[in-house]
Every structure is written in C-alpha cells, then in structure tokens.
Image 1 (cartoon, one colour):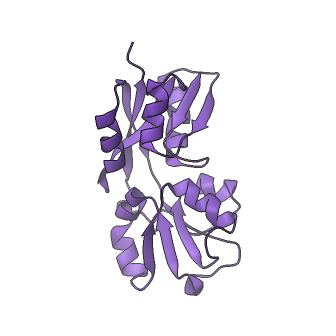
Image 2 (cartoon, one colour):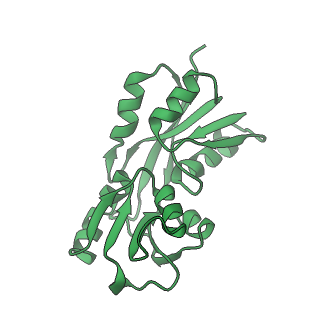
Length: 188
C-alpha cells in the first residue's frame, strides 16, 4: 500500500499517516509518498499513483486548512476516515544559532497561525514568511537553502531528522492543539 501525505519527511502529515496506519487502518505494510501539497496528494489518488491520501483539514487553533479545501474542490475522492492528532509546534534552528541571531521565522501558513500570539509576543521584530511545508522548511534550513539566521516552526521529528536544535518546544498558542486529518481513498 502506498500512502501519500501532504508534507515532507518529518511533517505532521507523516505522523498522521503513521497514526492512521497503526490505529485506524490496521495497515502493517505500507510506503509513504511525500507529496508536499494537498493538490498533489489528491491528484495522485485520483490517478491511481497512491492507494490512500492523508492531509489536514482543520486545526483547533489555526482553523480550516485552505490549501486542502481548494484541492478538495478540484478532485473526486471518498473520505475513509476523519481523525485527530495532537500537534506540538517547535521553533527549530541550526546548531549553535541563538535567539538574538534570528532574523526570519518561516513555516507553513497553518503553523504560523497556530503560533500567532506567541510570535507577536516573543518575536515582534522578526520577519515571518510562509513556506510550502513545515518539514520542507526544516530540510531546507538544514541543507543551507535558507539563511542560517532563519528559524522554522516544525515538529520535533523534523528537528531530529534534519539535525536541528529545538530553540523552544510547544510554542503553539493553545497547549491542547489538535489537527483533524482526512484519510482519503479513490472513488470506486
């Protein structure tokens, strides 16, 4: 079974796919396809390139994931399961970078929304920039594609995977922060 996720390795969608496979789908053997966007997930599902698609639809703090809504409007699929996972946003930096060196904070639009009050309170003078995916931002920071003075908001799994430091953990505005994900399958 091939499960397509809206995100890169280390994304919350990857975590959701693993939770779905173990807890809801009872799927033991699967491979993940990291498709980054909701559009790519649903196109791959519709075209038969993946067997199941996992993508976020709404967050308890950040609201509706508009990217997913736009993709859903363009594709035909069936919802197999709607499920929630708890989300902990973390501020990640390259090894050795300190808080006073940060000039830019980047992440997916949803992550920025989930941390809006924190960012205003703690980082009022730092530039905020949207990125295609939380884990992609972490990967690009680690690979030197973003300035070393950039911090990214992403999962602790992304920090571990890309060897980044967690400058601050659980920075989301609501400590009980949940995202609803859709497990989608092809219409038969």
